Length: 280
Image 1 (tube, one colour):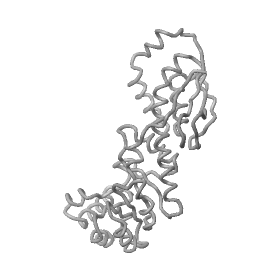
Image 2: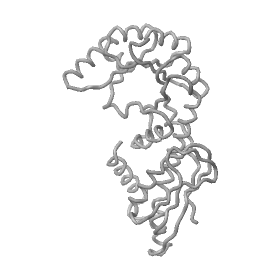
Image 3: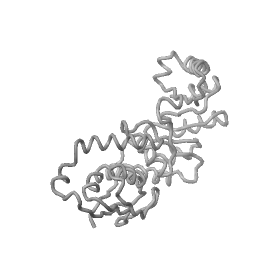
Image 4: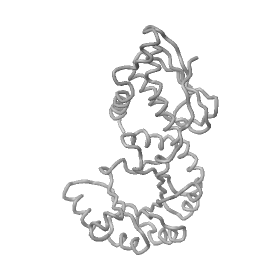
């Protein structure tokens, strides 16, 4: 995630929302009017998206001033003020919805991530996100996971090899899939980690027999089988639990000894965090 990526995201989002002008504000408010508004927290959790909101308002109008009181990752409660934005009334209103949409979604993700991390604290495993993100919003959603204390899995199809069940079946089995992958990486001079999904203990052993795998993904394993898989894997490579893991089950999976737990719900199933921008 780069500043260039974020700037492009903001510009495209503003084009989508503003079009050829915020005509309500342009029609009803004098062009020289100035005011200020504060970002009011109306929920309890972790705030995220403050830095992005600052970038949004700056893109709308570089003369707007931000007085910041909270940092991304801060614990917040109802009634806290994240920042005050000052300057052109029209500019504040034009950037309001995009800033709120991003911050509400990011704060929800960060808060859920932080909560799930409390459930696995004391275990030697890390919480991961997935590619189950909103199209074209992956950068900010994965940023929110980091703010909440989680770790990012791969960002896309380009930065890691993940051989899943369909790849295995289409390639004609685990051995073919892994060997073809190694050949492809060598021929194309690419240095990418290889993760392979296992559907049972037999496949765990097959994967290990091929060597060169960074991590085995234990997909939809129950607790007993997860513990058995972790024992088989030992120090040969990393282990990751995934597939339908919830806040009710995540602690038990962490106790199984896996290195990572991936949860798609971090990004695809969160309710918005309640925030509002109010004139003061």
